Length: 359
Image (cartoon, rainbow, N blue to C red):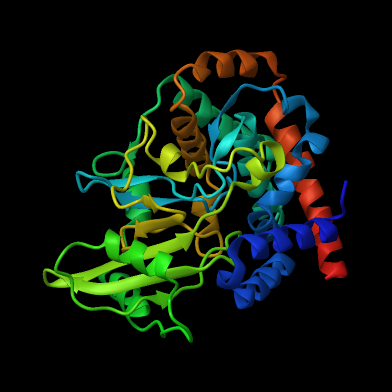
């Protein structure tokens, strides 16, 4: 198996080859800074490495039932949006690496991310974290349902709805983004224009830096006015899932919109793939909880349970898989998730140190 330094160089070379002149070198430097900062950020930045090594670390899961899964699952891969009825919805909101894979990997990676986040903030029980995630998943795979915040989950709605001052700051931040040094490539400009409502005000597409694992890929935003208020869209480059790249190279399809629109989710109607560019609506209703801002909420048993439930919602798009998943879960020993996640977290921590020393 390649070392983490070799693997990182190879994947970045692949990204450059795929994106060509659109590759954002300055964002890659920012990504490297994050990778040095913590093992949790390193996990977020290196999904391709998880895809390469998971069956070396946890070989028992290679034969688990397969579903169209999230792939790059972690604590910060959940947020809110408005569905077609205008309802506030919470759930998984980053499907860049969605692919067909063993269902258990989404659970293992989420649990490992929680263990890494906890280890950087003091001791906690691995079994409690894993039990909360698995409990939510078991409920969800048997009775999936979108997580709508209009009536239920008051505690989560209270935590996520922004006060007026933060809503104003949100719009001001995007209004003040500087223009880029060069023209926006036509694929992104055309995707942004196609995603906006008719008769909107004039605007200039601008580059944006965001995320961790996707740094290096170009992003652009369109900030404009329509019918008396601001409107915001983002366009982002999409590539073959790192999972498919490693395990099914012939599958070059982008599965993000497919999983986001599966039968047990209530998607944002503005989440669209135009060619190989993903466009989505940005707004103060489209936010996520970040570990640095609210670790207690993000690592609470209630939140971890709900994350497990939402993973099941995503997996439940494959109606035939539920029975096979339940049988597989019953066949595993009680602490399988905590043990697997502990092994993954330990490997990620070791590789983060090795990569930091080598880079």
